[in-house]
Image (cartoon, rainbow, N blue to C red; front, side, top):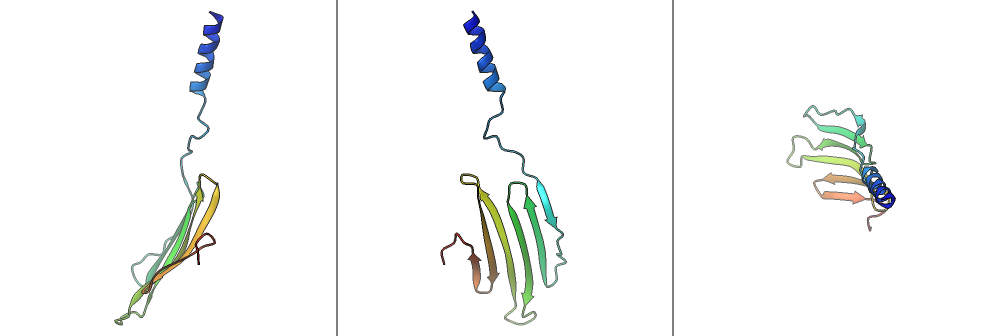
Length: 107
């Protein structure tokens, strides 16, 4: 009978204990005020509690011409949950495409 009570207590404790891999809710830590008035470009940014962040801005290039293009520059970061390594990508996107750069991206 004592063995049954001990076994029951161990099972109850295991079920009640929080899982070690239980995820915490992700919350907004920081927000860059956006400057998005719809003319000539935009700007925004944020940082989350899980290490993810993003900053981006854009400017209109050659406004009013046939070569008009929006040039976007920015960066984003994230933490790989398996290795706990933070990765950051800096980029430009323009009339010639998307151009990412980062230590982990082959040149």
